[in-house]
Length: 395
Image (cartoon, rainbow, N blue to C red; front, side, top):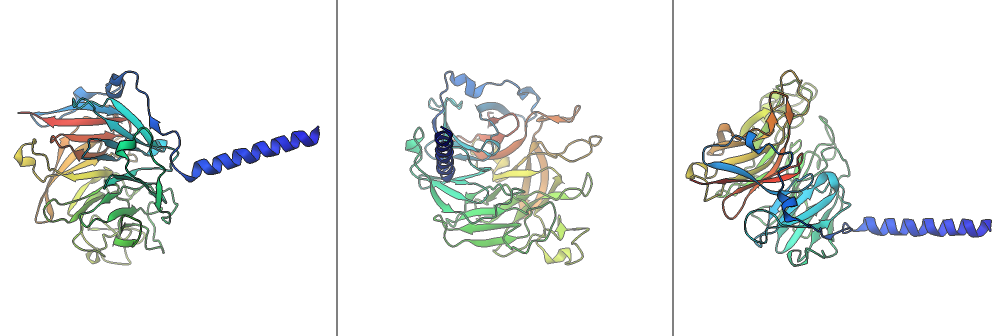
């Protein structure tokens, strides 16, 4: 009897390990249609202080969808909005089937992923970035309710959790751009892949380091006319409430170095590493942003419905500070704009504020990513209240 009991437990444990092993090999568990008995559940405004949002005259903000921990956004030509869920390990697909700009269908494309922040779409396939791996879901839009088994295209990025989550996007050259954040607040790394932006072919081949000295970018885009990459970068912590600035940078050519960990903001020598090289050795930011604002998503305005004065303005989702003293208050927690001329920022101003209650120094939403929809509206993700906002303009 004791032997039988032992063997039963042994085989039960073995079966459990096999199941766990199989389930962790492919990020496709618990996927498919996420039943929504009442579509209004996807657009409820509970916990949202929309009346607090301050926008320029003529603009308004609504709710497009409610999705837990909404992070990166990708809107396909077919009208599917893919949303990453870094904190919950999932990737969602959202559909607006009746064209009223309110979501009414939600699908789970993948689950049980490790910080799947980065998503991209190309030639009918959805690309998803974990911390160390890249997956591709082929022919995804016609299989939202039954996603295909993903294809592993790359699995050799560092496994560090610190700044390990990724933003990914395809550039005008057809290559997939993938950043690798610094595995620390401030440090030198022997591995040149850290604190960089890499790029590769869509099948995972030909990976190379594109630019260096990038502490932690979670958003980049390309100028609609010049094709140059622009990216946000999060400044280091623990140099005080007001130093260093976060950055908006422009890449003119491959191989450039943007200063980390030696120089911050183009002028501030790091107290630990700054004596090794002068700031003049590195590319200066196109625009210094506020301190600790945590700039993430960034896009050039391509909207034809926004007034022409906004054309090619650079919109930035500022996620907001976390380590400033309570007496001075948080920074960020808003959407800002940068006006550029000849590759340099000439104006830095607010566009949407009110996600942060300044009287209580508490935020009810934190912008993460933003994109422009075909109708000219702007979609903005928020990982605190779990919302995708829609900002639109009418005369």
